[in-house]
Length: 270
Image (tube, rainbow, N blue to C red):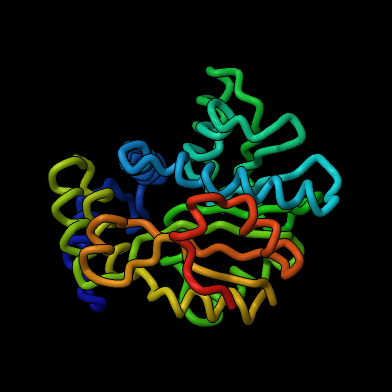
């Protein structure tokens, strides 16, 4: 309540509790239901296809530069593993590619594993810190994660990827319209109270492009640019998601060569 999150407080008050402690099972189920609805959002936004369109040229740039396989893609905060599972099923990224999803929530990862096993998908889903794997990732990806971090935490998020070769992080486009658009969409498409609330708060917390690029550059030393960054309100309406893309300096030019038409949607690199 002190933060003005009255709707969140009302939602929490409705959750089962004992001795002022929320029921773990009830919280886990609410989170699971919300992530199921979040997967629907990712499906409607063709999020896996968006990621794949950048991963294919990135992977080719790594191959051209002589990076030895297997090429590891690590999804940071994978949740139910929608992106990981979709890429494993339909991405056609190459037999020299490993796809690993990491999340710290046991309930989400267990369900992600179950879904992957049902389709016999070739991917890994781990309860783990994505930046502390025994074999580091070559490319780090995420969807809807960046807005959770502020200040030093945002810098630390990018710093954890210095050991990698590249990253592609999609998040909500920063715009005065984003919270309103998020509210309308979530009211129309979502049924879970937690999902409805979180969607609007996430849109409010979306970072300006320059904030993300500045943090990424300073923490990694990579060459960075935004993909589908909106230059005006119309752009924000047409492209509600934007990506922060970064690579080691020697990979940037090979990436540009392989991007094809997507290159015109990439902002100025620095």
